[in-house]
Length: 232
Image 1 (cartoon, rainbow, N blue to C red):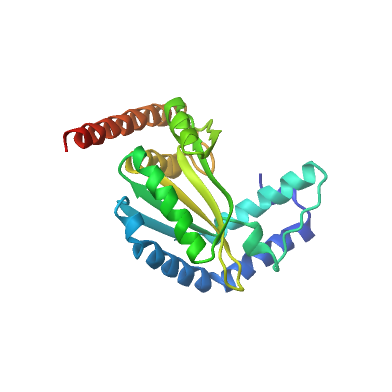
Image 2 (cartoon, rainbow, N blue to C red; image 1 turned 135 degrees about the vertical axis):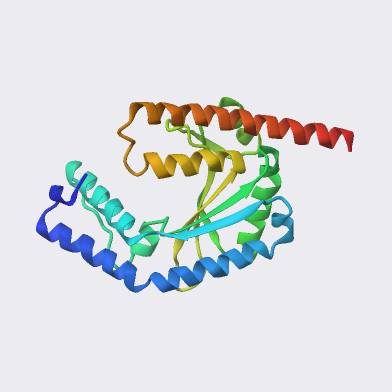
């Protein structure tokens, strides 16, 4: 999808929204620092966490997303109500956080810590947690924790939370939790196969193979920690 699918007024609307975001970019950068400090200061969480990553959305990525939303709305003959007043609530991934951990069985404690921390700090989880996964074993485990699951056709695996912050700015942001092995696949796929699929059939097939390999590695890491726990 390109801006050629939009009218001149719709293109101007997208430009206005992107300019509004750029004008407030520093606020999002400050917010990522504040929230990172909050996560890192929670001992019940960090003892299960390998690392925390954050990013503020690139303005051109926002432009592409808005063009896609306007185009889809136009094709389905729906109105779209994104404005400067609600942009930071309607687009939920302007700020993104990723919590990386070693093995899947840590997710129970991580989920409990995240929910407790957000409740104490008055952050509202407006959607989630939702585990997006293609692997049946992972789906069964997440379901046992009461975490909703969605099948991921792209072979992507991650647990998502959509959260609204408590200040008058009312930013919404996305939090993802995944293992280090899942992060390997995610980074490779993001570099080569996102936002547009790779033009190479071989590359796309190898990315699928990598998903299966990282899933196997995650299972092995789970097994190693399980064996260690029994012998401790």
